[in-house]
Length: 321
Image (cartoon, rainbow, N blue to C red; front, side):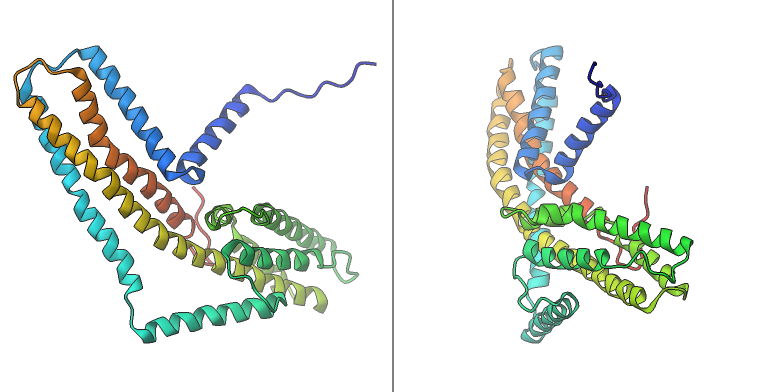
């Protein structure tokens, strides 16, 4: 007897999967230095094609204007770097009383997490801390009795759907968080797309119906508290990530923008001489002029996406587009 043939994956779905994985790598998962390198390489190829199509530069005036604009634009990076540093320092330069208040708020949050999860010794790293909350949430969700005698069929179906969604959601994040070499940022990224607000709304609707047994109502109340803690945790980790990412962006802009500015000024002197000009100098000028922008784009895109995905706080949810 012939063995059954596995249905082939449609080509369109495979292509969409590759495109989705590539876009996710560019926007979130990929190293910002590698993403900046890919952007710069793409721009360099485009510049090379333009030179191949239109030939060598024979008129110095347009080239001179372009070089002057690139130099002035890269000098504006100094203002960007200063603005970024001011933004970071504005959150760090606080009075002792404000710092003490922050420490007390964090300690109070950890105490609440310990009380809710029953874990007395909470980890100090973000992935391990989130793992404790997620594991406790799974235990609460799996402990809900779906076969309670007082449940009618409608409530049973709604409760079963909620439990299934919560378990699937939390397991998706917890599987990554449990890895020994997971980075704090990876734990944050995996929790970005989780719609905890919808789960909390469903919990509230079930509890407000008034027909649930006391044991299930208590379990749902505990599940509600766990979901809130998960959302607060990722909001706090988002803040820590941005506070660390902005100084990296500032430093990379200086590392790349400084040599780029020197290269542009040197090429400008070349274009002040008589033509013809080597195409390699024009290509180098394009690379040097776009390099700082590639760095800025690679970092700002990810920061903006993370800020957008964590903009709402439960019980409000992020609108779907």
